[in-house]
Amino acid sequence: MIWLLEYILRQIPCGIHDWQKFIKPEHLVELMEKQGFVDFDIKGFNVLGETISENLQAYLYYQRNKNFRITISDNTSLMYIGKAVKAEMPS
Image (cartoon, rainbow, N blue to C red; front, side, top):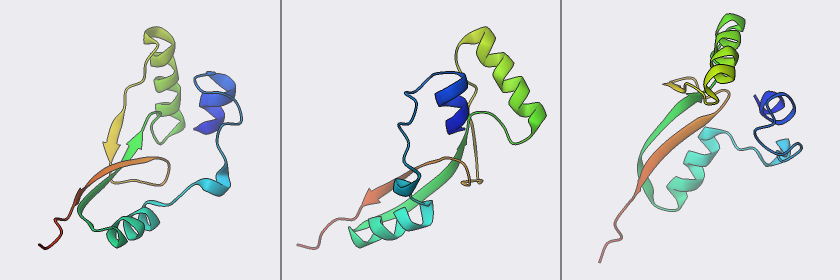
């Protein structure tokens, strides 16, 4: 995904991502729990699909429309988005 967006589509500056700074969703949830967040909803965020055919279709769609069709799923292996609620502090 990064390679495609940085080097092929040029949608983001080349080299902007540092693999050492990536965080897995499970680790993010742990960190947020320590800060008092609850009610997590983490989902996979997919821009290009999961198969070569879906990748090609997504690329052709992008070429025609200059935007992506985004899908949300339970697969967080590529990209993810989420939300949580900050728990109220006891008074």
